[in-house]
Length: 405
Image 1 (cartoon, helix red, strand yellow):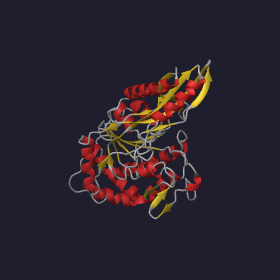
Image 2 (cartoon, rainbow, N blue to C red):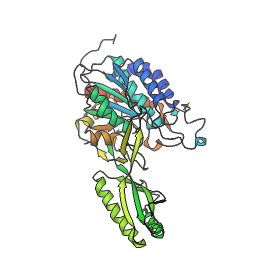
Image 3 (spheres, rainbow, N blue to C red):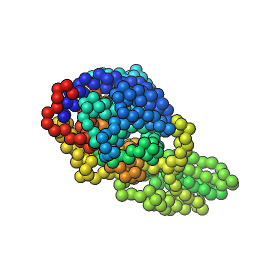
Image 4 (cartoon, rainbow, N blue to C red):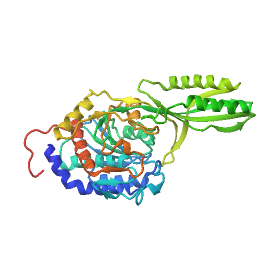
């Protein structure tokens, strides 16, 4: 079976790289992914997916139907990218999609358009190979992933797939893992510390005390633990107010409510040194408008998550990769910079879907200038993903396979 996949992949490599380049040449900042979505939908149709649709959130969904109702596997990668930053740091353009020294360059190459291309073509590879599926293989290109808040993924699972009668038993993310099998990461929360008093001097002093006292984190640490913004001051109904924005890492066993309570206690302790000042700490909420016009109120929290490394999902994934000769390297995302995350939090914590990551990009290249991904790793990721997908939802193939297939 794996020789069959490898042989068919050789004939698809030109199309695969052309698609990956086209994705990188298509701008798709968060909540502006419609052009990339049209490109993905066109490619899925060209690969003869059984069902292809773009939902009301802007997610593109392609399905290869099996002979039974399940189990169902979701392959998911996001289409959106962060802002390119200083474009002067990009040779040519952030959207060049240039190939140089065996690497493909462009905004989102590692995070995670290389992974998206590999997942779309992994399904196409299974289709071309005529390998039978017992359950359904769902490939989703999602919108508004935006640092793990994952609005598009929430809409995909809660509404789109539910309406299609599809409930994934497993999920594989195309996020950057450098072809490792990743099964979790820490979380993060965005908070507001609010200070209020009718004495403006008390508020100013309290803001200084809280900012300096709570923000004493080593900036040279390998993993960022907390980031604090500068106080924002305003007057409201006769009171002087200050708001300090905070980003805070969340560990696997750390509850948001408990962390908010501890931060409130510490902020109150520091603020009281300045005088009578009211203190409140709360998770930030924000309204998000989807391309369809739908408005969603979202709490800015990404919970830590972890899939059991001895779960059937990881066991079967390891077996499939080992059978192909691909490297099997379990691990977790480090997320060294705050502001990073994956939709694994939503899938695992909110919908209880066992999830792993397997992508060709390197985590260190995510959100960086001159981002790139190795071409050879996109190809290997396509092969490995197809093998894992068949191992999870395919019908085992024994014996001789005719040459004409």
